Image (cartoon, rainbow, N blue to C red):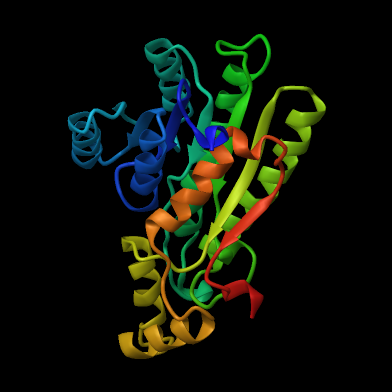
Length: 268
């Protein structure tokens, strides 16, 4: 099991204060990594880092808006300067704005894309500049992009969210092939959760339960459960365990792949 160890590795997890991101932080720190938590939720991010330190695990927090190129540059620089390198980037930060396509605004579209797509692009760019040969780290690494099953199949009320996650899915594959071809030593993979018991998972139910769609929370929950062969939402730690695999040396020959964690949702 030594290949799953994260000893001597430095990881940056965006949106790491809560939800799936926080579960990823837990998994990586418990495996021995030094994890930098980045988030716009300062209170939750600081609390998460302090809680881990109290357990003698290695973590720190950086306030970070992933839609800002300047903040990406400064965040990567801080991670490398403070910790001597960067081995893993988990592009987890993201938002969901649900609703019928005809009711959504161009501002909604641009807001989602600035975080879910531009944030991932900027993360890969500045991580690659640091990780590639000749960069400030220069020892390669692993980039894991959090997408969604909504980036693979269509669902009502998630048109712009799903399209943003589809962009992440495609961008991951292009970056993986490019980085491997250029000999960067950087692997890039995407993870596609199905419905997960997090606040964002709750947003999905709220959208489906709206008067313009199913009309009630009960009907929304029934629909979702009927679409999942395992008949339950996923738990954040179940997503985090897959991210841990992709971050570790156990996945050394894995790049450009998409991993679905959805209880069978997309197999239907």
